[in-house]
Image (cartoon, rainbow, N blue to C red; front, side):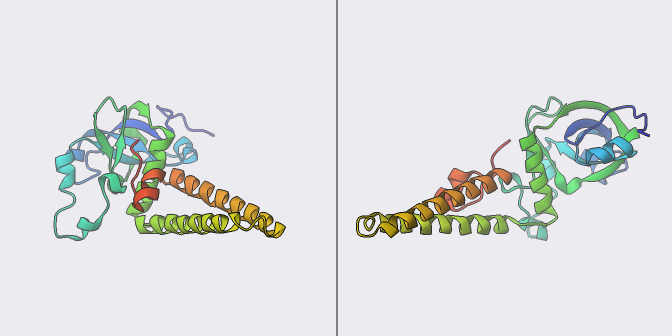
Length: 214
């Protein structure tokens, strides 16, 4: 039986929640906007929600990462952890803070105020994975570098075979095979960039990871 909750809440919803006593941080010890990241089956049946706070107090947020500590190496901003939340009427120019993920009772929810786009949620999923180190930026980069190398190798083979087609009909079939592989590798590169919300154009030009702004 589905419980009779006060609010229907779904993954990706932006809600106002009372975080008093949940996080030992002054900027979070109040009613703040948060993003629901728990799955929808849990959101339907459970009395608790997993949420990520949103804030636009960037100077205070930066205090989480003091210089000359282990936090200096944690990727933030365009590197992946702090995700911009567009069209947020409560706090303009705000970011989601995956490192402050917490669990709250549904009784702490005061209002549902919006919903994140699929692109924003994808960026948020990536940020959480980076924070918990399920995968790293270096791992993403290496995966893309490997694909770029395959694209370049197949392109070189195509160029070599272009001048040999007249000499041997076999070379025509070889070139078609390399053309097919080249297209597959390019499609994979595009798919992986899209999955990780990485700028494909910037990576191809500079071999650097740049996340697409949401």
